Amino acid sequence: MSHRFKRLYPYLWRYRVAIFWGMVCLVATNFLEIRVAMLVGNGIDMLRLPFGPFTGLQRAALTLFAVLVAGLAVGMAVTRFWMRRLIIGASRRIEYDFRNDFFTHLLRLSPSFYDRYRTGDIMSRATSDMDAIRMVIGPSIMYLTNTVTVLPMAIAQMLAISAILTGLVWLPLITLAPLFYYFKSRIHRRFRRVQELMSDLSTYVQETLAGVRVIKIFGREAGRSRDFNRVSDQYVASNIGLARLQAVFIPMLMLIVGLAVLMLIWAGSWLIIHGRLTIGQLTSFFLLLNWSVWPLIALGWVLTQIERGSASMLRVEEIFRQQPDIAPAYDSQKADVGPAPSPAIPIKLCGRIEIRDLTFQYPTAEEPALRNLNLIIEPGATLGLTGPVGCGKSTLARLLARRYNPPRGSVFVDGVDILDWPPHELRRQIGVVDQEPFLFSDTIAANILFGSRGDGRARQYADAAQLASDVDSFPAGYETLLGERGINLSGGQRQRVALARALGREPALLILDDALAAVDTHTEEAILSGLKQLLKGRTTLIISHRISTVSLADEIAYMDRGRIVEQGTHAELMALRGRYHDLARRQQLAAEIERTA
Picture 1 (tube, rainbow, N blue to C red):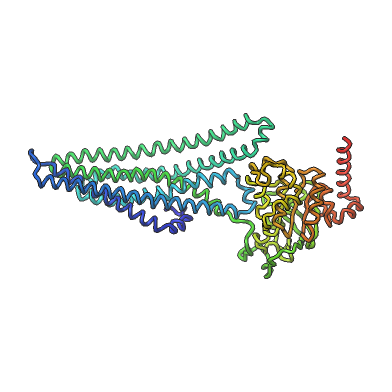
Picture 2 (cartoon, one colour):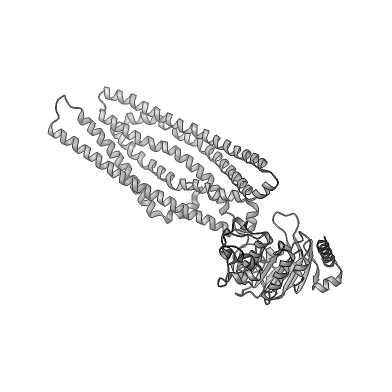
């Protein structure tokens, strides 16, 4: 097995017992095949008798040969059955474990990974690449081992029959080695290109289906169909190129095998004519060659599968090499993490947030999203965050939820550097409502209680989010099954389900990132009124471009270009007559125009 498959070694070791006994059955099958070939040859030689009836002894001997061959055939059937059941069964279980570990690894990776890799590409690696790897683990290992075990036994018997005939027959077969070497790298390169195009195709289909409503609204069905055909044509052309290579490879194998058989017939006939070989021995030799040639032909197929699996393994290994940016614990091996972490991390989050000179830049961005930011949120306080689009409000929310790593010494939660908090423990006590909520294709109740630490009180959380009356109007109520991403709900209803879901966690820190952007002002007022009681004693960060949303906060910060330029209560900021005041006046004027229109 190539070093490229070394990640699979622990899985092979895990199922070593099944694989070992499968190999034992394989060797037994090959041994029985060799015995059958020799018995058939001996039986044929017994038929070369003078004309006349068979004697009783001869009939008994032929009957014994027939019974032995039948018995060996039954034994071959049994061992072959268990060989395939054990080895192929182990390969399926290894595939199951490996695929699960791949999926678990994907769940561990940070958001920055999904910024770099497309969903369709990841799906292709998790499906078609995994299938190619399984073919190496199961059938390829089985046929490769079969070739390695049957050839020495068959060649040994061939040499025992006739060394001259063995040398002549195997003369064309030794050309298989350079043939394998020639096609090996070419198959690898072409199959990797096929898999890359498969990723492009999967990505295109996934994006098209996800955005099909936008496509229909703008009437772009024909254009998308043409683009799909273009990508599909590239995939087909690459596959045809691979098929052409294989179409040359397999017939060349058959040609070489045909030459070996031709050599056997010519040389074997000459040896029989000169009395140096019997017909029975030639028959045994032919059967031995046949059972040797099939593994060699299978070796060509195995080579193809190994190169396919090798290309796929490189693509899967590329994902396994990715590590989460959010480390679960302090890593003393990294030189840039700064001083050692605080020795004590509280189990229960109180909610005090302190930000010191925070400057943060996304890996793919050209400029920092946050610049020298300083901020303190006391436990149980509510901070409103507003400002123009792109000023860094959502970035701050992502850092507090530890979706990205801030620089060490810049963000503290309850006096502990956020980098020293175990991510799982920190997130367990945080509730987040994004401006673009994601809902699962499950019931409304299941979505509300997703990750809930409460006792299943879906209606209570729906009441707080002003969602209960809407749910009651559905025929199935809280058991209403949602479509993909909650498509059968309005935008405002989806945001309220997400809000109820965040409240269901009963978090110590609640982050509302433009969570009410899709609801009307009347519903917003009702939600904010219901939240006032729930937010008591809970640290809350409310991010919104609406002044009406952030006005209930104990304190409000106005951000611009990654900095806090104004901070205070609503009354203080209005009296300051700065940017916050201008934003409030513009929104008030827009509301008045809307009411009079």
